[in-house]
Image 1 (cartoon, rainbow, N blue to C red):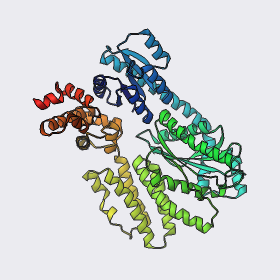
Image 2: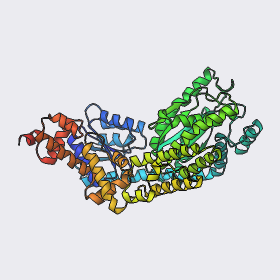
Image 3: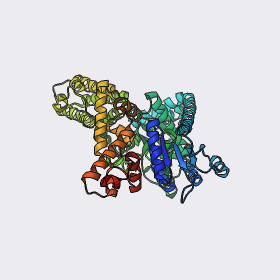
Image 4: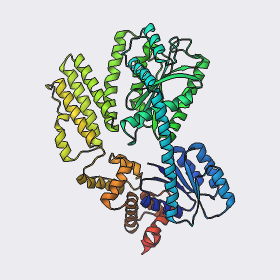
Length: 554
């Protein structure tokens, strides 16, 4: 889904275009601004793919806005609407990177054609980038797979940690890192796939994230990276000149501290590039100091715990690990730490896979959790702990995304709240695997008879949250569907577009408040989702043929 921002200092023009595009291009996520400065506020917090803007506005003209847009989002397509048929403005707009130029007298169909042309070019650019990335990925795949397999084994504690073994593997895989120097660990997490792609497509996008990071860091950093699971990437980092790593683990000289802060600062740029070029939001956690190679499993565990804890909640977070996590410890202390961290971490990770559609990773991790618990099972309490942990993951999911009665009957939800410790480990595995299969198979595929339920839930949310965010993206999250899919489903089932229903709901709520309450006009405008009293008046007049005050007095 592409995002389009409409900018004009006349609200009636903006609202008219929003209404028109809501009907003709419901797949677009629309944003609006009534000045160049408001537009910059939107652009500073959201990736925008297309901007449709007036070229002459008070305070900052469209050509100045164009410069700022291209600085923030170079791939954005900027189309100018103007009533001034002036060659000078046309020349400045196009030479400055504008995509197209239209007169305000242009018909709706002409404006839509220009938007369609911009979408086609965005699609073509995305496809070209995908093919280039795929070609590069294929050519390096054998080497990457060797490196990835070793990094996975190393961080998960499955690789020999002797100096000679590590040295031999670094040479064999061509990772370009030095055994003589300790290593910084950087963990990246895809916060949400947003319905993007197949499993293979997601692997390609994870590879793109690794490429983006490498391009930003390679001037001063030696690094190797690996995809750790369906949503995590890990980088092993060393300063290019060895500064900050020569004095040993946990110690940094001034140059090392400067280098570390530079890397940490660049994470913000990497996040912005991931947002713009591949449309993904990525969070990062980095070890605060270099760790010895034999301490890498503990350092990785600590970052995972940090990322999946309270501090890691949200999107595009940047975290520094706690100092001292990689201090020397006995094998018994290391075992205790791993056990404490990995139990909660892996259970939480199952919930992430269930939420984001990582079916293969979910099944693999479920097997790992149960196999490990079965090996360590010293009493029935271990099985009870695992049962309740798994049940909590599914109950949390089902509380957020309720099931219809037919599917609930298939699952047998009563077993989630009544643990049966007499089940064998294999029976426990089979039950939770079947439960996950049913949820994965039914996500994003509501049956025809349930489409009216989806529409009903969306309508209920809109009616009770008119003063809040009722964007397509927000509504899609409420019913756990892809935004484009929800837009099509809603129009097919309800017979009108989502934006049309939202406008109808706002009109009816405004009419009710105007006739049956003493609220002032500006208060009602906020209650039906308008920040500007003037925008509300223009909207109401366009809908009812009279101003709000005229309607109240009638």
